Amino acid sequence: MSNIKLDIKNVYGCVTRPEIMGLQEEVSANLEMLKKGSGEGNDFLGWLRLPSSITEAELTAVEKTAERLRDRSDIVIVIGIGGSYLGAKAVNDALSDSFEMLKKERKNPMMIFAGHHISEDYMQELTAMLDQYNYAIVVISKSGTTTEPAIAFRILKEHLEKKVGSEEAVSRIVAITDATKGALRKLAEQEGYETYVIPDDVGGRFSVLTPVGLVPLAVSGFNIRQLVQGGADMEKACLNNADLNTNPAALYAATRNALYRKGKKIEILVNYQVKLHYVAEWWKQLYGESEGKDGKGIFPAAVDNSSDLHSMGQYIQEGERILFETVISIKENDHTVKIPSDDKNLDGLNYLAGKKIDEVNKMAELGTALAHIDGEVPNMRIEIPRLDAYNVGQLMYFFELACGISGYMLGVNPFNQPGVEAYKKNMFALLEKPGFEKETEKIRKRL
Ligand code: PA5
Image 1 (cartoon, rainbow, N blue to C red):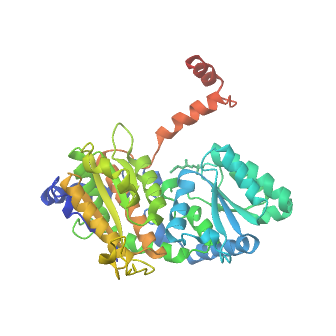
Image 2 (spheres, helix red, strand yellow):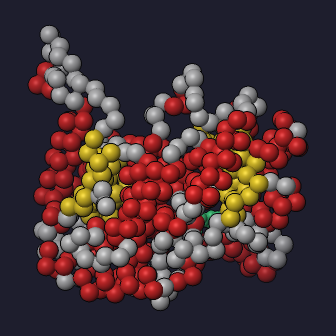
Image 3 (tube, rainbow, N blue to C red):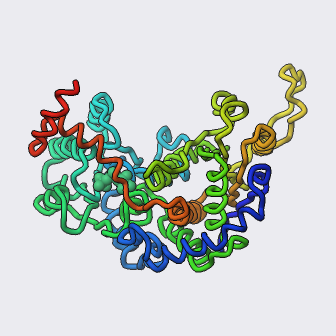
């Protein structure tokens, strides 16, 4: 059963319900194309039935690895970029206590990321900090050749070996990569690291429920079984049902395309729970890399409210009318904090006394939605019951499936990313990488 409720009534000022429902045939055809594997990018559809096909043996193996690393470390360094980092980061941040890192007694190794950018200061500060802690490394790269994580791994491998010795380092490093290809596969085999395989037919941004997401999350103590179960239940609810009235993923894909066709070129994913910040980053990558090509695509942006109502709120209310919003609303909080009464009432807040903070948050959400609708920003609302591993699993599969349908509706191949090669080519030419001599010569002339 889908726990996700998608409410689209607040887009009707821009597109009508009949216009959206009129896309039923198109949605059905595109979902069918995904299921049959008859569309472009059909060699990257392994994610489609991934949640329901993960076996008990696979989960047990991941948990066993996690146990070994947990025994040896206070920190797990997760090295990866793009799809090889954002899934774990999104789930970690969504489900962690906000002040986990400051807790005196921590039950689980803390997840820290590296190789997701090329900041020299970050790397120096990271290694200086790691001098003081026990740590393990999970290095993730599907291609096994991506520069950012490769640099980070070279530095951290050396650091760990110096700190604990080469033999112990081997037992603290896990590599997640292609089954046969790439420098990381070769290195892992030669050094004797435990490895996990990223299936050939699952692209980085769809890989959160492969070892890419599951291994680091299990090391940090998250309930990966619940996460996978959430994905599997959403798969069951949505994959074999194209009906826009009952399949929220299909309805989301249809509605965002209907809005795009009316000139709404930017979608803002809005949260009122800052723990969702990296779910939005993961979503941005999923949709940006899948849809932004061939001169087409809805630009994915995100805001954390109510913070961003005090910054981006102005633009959203009154700037260019090319926006629509998708709000993720969490029905129930984990904790209750009530606003106290104050005899002096100098701040004038006694009218809120006794209310839960979340009641104020929900009114901020409702008030904002109404204001934005008045400002001609159509608004969809996704409600999930609570922020836990099961519901995050549902949400992630919901977005993945909708992305596949939506990309085909846009007329692009949602499963490639040819555009990311351009910067790499220039960077390699500028760095004089062997094999790029001609490009180096050419790019020098431009400078
Ligand atoms: O979604 C994708 O395919 C990309 O974002 C990749 O995950 C990213 O470029 C990292 O690639 P790799 O895992 O090969 O190092």
